Image (tube, rainbow, N blue to C red; front, side, top):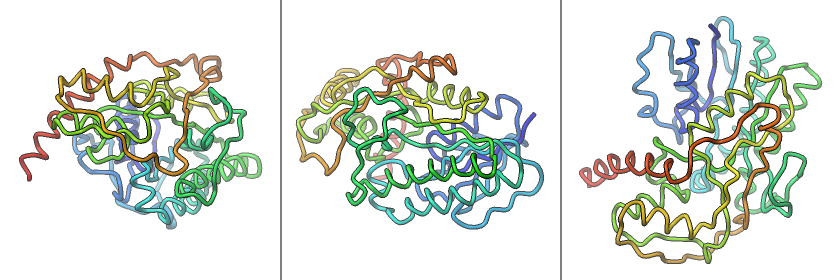
Length: 316
């Protein structure tokens, strides 16, 4: 049995990590200030081994007793969120990471940083492997997230090299599944919500930009394996199956049986043209690769959104 602290634990991926560690028999402390997380994601966790702390990790963190593992997932993660909360995004990536690393050092805990494929920016290398340094616009609207995560990685490696903190870095590619918010702002929840409501499905640009989507169950397994490994450098976790955004929209319209039409909106500034992980490192070191197909994952996610869309409509 271990004691685990998950910052951002009431968020989408964070809440599933709470589930996983509790299932492993560990004690879990979830810390979240609920800017983008939700208590709904953790309301089912009535286990005596689970506790929730409503707190902003950019402040000094005090946790009584031992802590064995810290997973730092606190941050807005969708473009809609980090453009609404640009300063908070920069602060949690810098000050928050510093505070949580300080706690890891104090407790002698293993630390895992949730980084992102956005560290690669609008990539000039395809697919993206961990040795690629990226093509990021630091003063563009997406820079608040991209640079916060790049700084967080640098801070993590500094604590690893200078203070000998045992660290891990996961670069998370597009992830989807139940518990995503209807108004998350990312492609899959947007398209599903629109399709289930028979509204126009809005695709940015011509829709020929590509993405790779990993189901939450696979993502959590990859993160868990990385935490338990002995590897300190960044590791991509994502599904290498690449598809166009307009292809995704058509697939969701088909799976929902929707009458929706696809409409095109202007492409946001610095929106990446391609995104596909090279998961060779994850495969070799962690013996990990995704198991859930896009069609199966979308079906599960659509069933979840059907219940949420019904609730949303009843509240209008």
